[in-house]
Image (cartoon, rainbow, N blue to C red; front, side, top):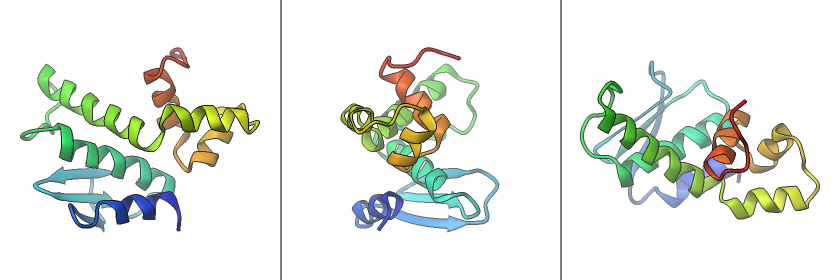
Length: 129
C-alpha cells in the first residue's frame, strides 16, 4: 500500500474522498474531498493532504484568493499538509539514509518535488530559488 492509499484509509471514516475528472486539482467542501483523477499518485498524495488540511483549518469558501484572509487560510492548510506528510523527522531520516537531491528525497517520501521544496522552505531548510 502506497502513502496516498494509507492517507486515504486514515481519513475514510471522517471524509468522503473521490477522484473525478474535475477542472481544479483538488477541492474540499463539507466533509468531501474531490481530486482530479488524471494526476500521478505523488500529486494526489500532496493534494489530498492539503485538502484534508482545509478540513481542519479552513472555514467558508476561499476559492477567491484575492482576500488576504483567504490566502492565510490556504497557507494554513498547506502548512498542515507539510507537517502531516513531510514531517521534519522524515526529511532528516532521508538525508541520514544518503539522499541529497530534492528529487531523491521526494521519491523516497512519495511526494512531488515542488511540494517537498515548499515544505523545506516552511522548515527553513531551503531558501527561495
